[in-house]
Length: 128
Image 1 (cartoon, helix red, strand yellow):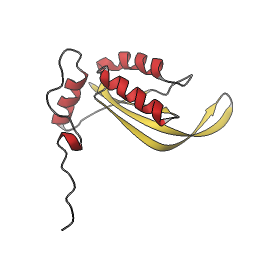
Image 2: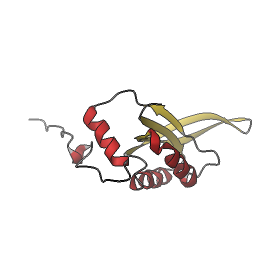
Image 3: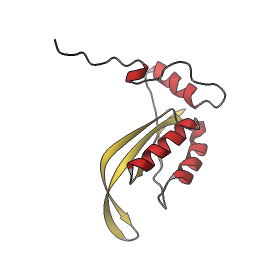
Image 4: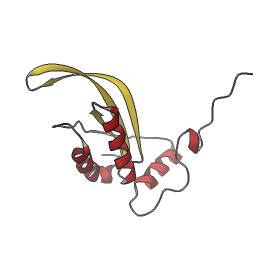
């Protein structure tokens, strides 16, 4: 497995998604969690085909943090069988990867701002 992974999970309610996202980042198990609303999931559950609105969590972490992240996610998750799929990150922007590494390191706080508008992303220009 690569050093870094993206973990996918879904929940039914935005409140649960935000609660889980905050907990994972606060515990330094994830550098960032994107909360993506508006999914329609079609799946088989207990012999029946179901469909439900869900919210996707896109969780960025390091492979060595995955066991602790899995334990926390299962504990925090409202579903009987939470979705947790870990996908390897093959490559990325080196400063972003360094920020990710520092953000999930249990020993030291992250150095400076990470990605995002309030943390360095250029703002859209206003029309002239």
